[in-house]
Image 1 (cartoon, helix red, strand yellow):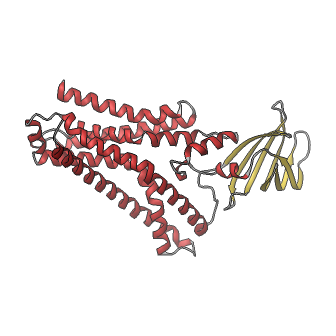
Image 2 (cartoon, helix red, strand yellow; image 1 turned 60 degrees about the vertical axis):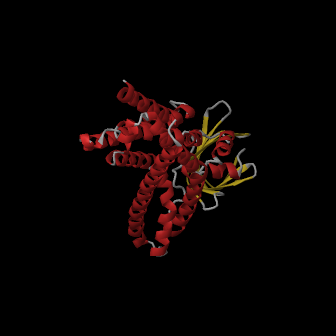
Image 3 (cartoon, helix red, strand yellow; image 1 turned 60 degrees about the horizontal axis):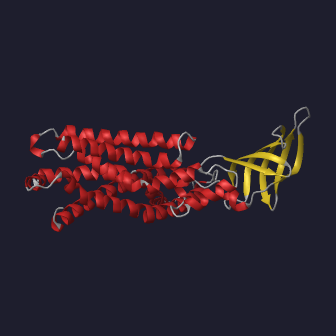
Length: 359
C-alpha cells in the first residue's frame, strides 16, 4: 500500500478537480436554463426576472445530477493529466507504485461522492424539482402534469375499467379530460365514457359532463356518471409523480404503493436501482478516464487520448440510456438495467488497464 501522505494528496487533488468540474457543469446548466426561462417569461405577466432566476435555481440540480457521471469523467481526466504534466505520476511509478495503488484513493473519493449524491443531493434536488414544477404551473399555467398522460387500471363491483386522464388540478383530487373504457368480468368491452372532469370519492368516480358511447346505441350525454372504484386519492395522486421528483428514500415505498394500486411501478424501481448503482458507475468513469490519461505527458498524443476518453464516456452514456429504455419497456429487470452499465464500465476499465500496465 502507498503511504498515507500520498494517498491523501491524490484523494484531495481528485476531490477538488471533480467538484470543480461539477460546479462548472452546474453553472453552465443554470445559465442556459435561465436564458430559456427569461425567453418564456415574455408571455407570462406573473414572471419577473427575480422569479425566473429562482425558478432556474430550483430546476438546475435535477438536470445537473444527470450530468454527474460526465463531470466525474472530465474531472478525472483533468486530474490525471495534471499529475502527468507535473511528472508526479512518473516519480510515483519510478518509486515502484503501481497503477492500482494510484487509483485506489481517487476511486475511494469518487465512491464517497457517489454515496453522498444519492443519500443527500438526490433528496434535495427532488424537493427542488417539485417546488419548481409548482411555481412553473402557477406562473405559466397549462397542464399540471409534466410527466405525460395518466393511465389507470382498476377492478371494482362494476367490472374492470381503464381510466385515461390528460391532466389534473393542483391538489390532484380532480382529473381533467377523462376517457374511461369499461369491461365486464370476462374482459369484454362494454362502453366508453368521455368526460370533462372527474372527482374521486370514497368508493366511486364522479364524472362530470360525460358522454356514454355504447356499441349499437346512440351517444348518451349525462351531467354526472358514477363509476365504482377501489382506488383512493393518494394512489391516484402518486400516479402523476415523475421518478425524478421522488427522493431516493421514498422510491421503494412509492413503488410498492403503485403496484398495489394496479399501476406499473417499473419506472420507480428502475430509478431506485440506478441510484443504488451510481457509486459503481462513477467508479467506472474513473477507470475509463485512467485508460486514456495515464500516458507520459511529454510523449505527445494528448489530444488523441482526451478524444478517446470523451468517446468512451459518450459510448457508456448512450449504452446507459439504451439499457434504461429496455428496462422501462420491460425487456430487462430493474436490477439488471440499473447495475449493468456501471459493472460493464468497471470491467472495461480494468481490462484495458491490465492490458496496458501488466499485459
